[in-house]
Each structure stands twice: as C-alpha cells, then as structure tokens.
Length: 154
Image (cartoon, rainbow, N blue to C red; front, side, top):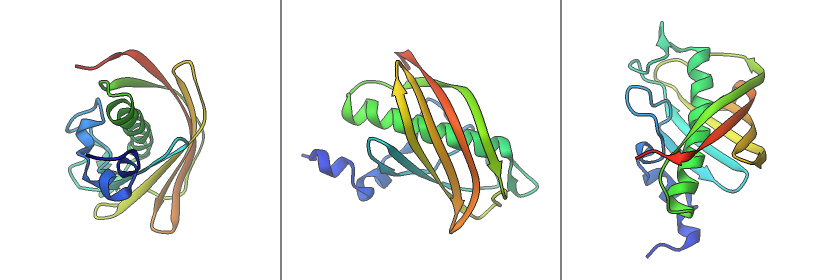
C-alpha cells in the first residue's frame, strides 16, 4: 500500500500515465510526464516531437508553449483530484494569460521542463506563475489564470 509520502516522490510521479490526469487526449496532449507536485509547485516534462499539434518547422510554437503551461496546470488539478481527493478529472478554462515573455522556441528532439507556481487558489480560480526551461535556458515566463469547472469529466 502506498503512503502519502510515496505519491509525492518523483519516482512515483514519473510512472503516472499523464492521460489519467488530463481532460485532453491525443493529439492534443502537450505534456509527457509529471515530475514534481506539492501544494504550491507542479512540474512537468515534455518531449518535443514532430507530431505534436503545435509543432511547425521543427519548433513548438508560442501557442504550444501556452497550451503546455495550461496542461501543466491541468496535470496538477488531475493529480489532486485522483490521488488526494479521489474524484474524477475536472476541466479548467484559461481565464487570462499575462506578462508573457518568450525568449526562444524549443525544437523537435528537445525536452522542456515547465514549472507552475500557484500564487492564489480560491473559489475555483487559480492564479499562477509559469516558467518553461530547456536545460538551463529559460524559454518562456508567464502568468496564467485558470477557472475550474465544478463538474467532473466521465
């Protein structure tokens, strides 16, 4: 039987099929793995593949980066629902993207790490800061506001 500490370990998080946490399904999945979760921070990794929806000319577009941030938020919500609250997936809707700064687009073959730090979570709204990195390089920073619908996806 898993202890509560076990479900927060990177080893366990990496074994979770990301599709179990997201309302999105292929070909619209823009994250590969959940690698970190705590009350304030969630991290994912994404392998940039040529068949990703927002890849054009071997680069993941700005739209793909924004969707990657949103899906990192969705993975957080899915993890909380499945492993902590023991309920189904909920859909989140992007309320706002602000203070976005894109330095560089990732290319096919690279793996990016997305970090979402929750600033505030109240009444089904999440306000967070996001950073996407490839290795030690920061590719994008942004703020995101997500509204979570009350109903669960079946």
